[in-house]
Amino acid sequence: MNGWSALPAMAAPQGGQQGSPYGGIVMMLLIVGVFYFLVFMPARRRQKKHQEMIDALKTGDRVVTNGGIFGTVTAVDDLKIQLRIASEVKIDVAKSAIAGLAEKAD
Image (cartoon, rainbow, N blue to C red; front, side, top):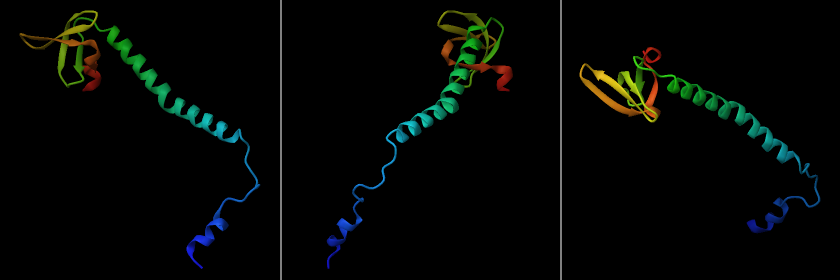
């Protein structure tokens, strides 16, 4: 007897008990809901808080950029912020490059 003769015996039973067709859909919706509450909601909340912080920046605030540069805000524009990083050194950075306030980063 070769190994191929055992294959029909291992096949799924015909006409056996089948689960509800809605069980898989309900399980998928449950997984999506849990994923939404554990991942998407907190990320959206953090993003909103970060955007509010960037919108509230004003001259004199100490900030840190995503690249790790600490500086003091000297001017705020629609798309960029000017930072003083040394006594006579000023740079322009995109608003999106601001990671946070320097007091919180210390």
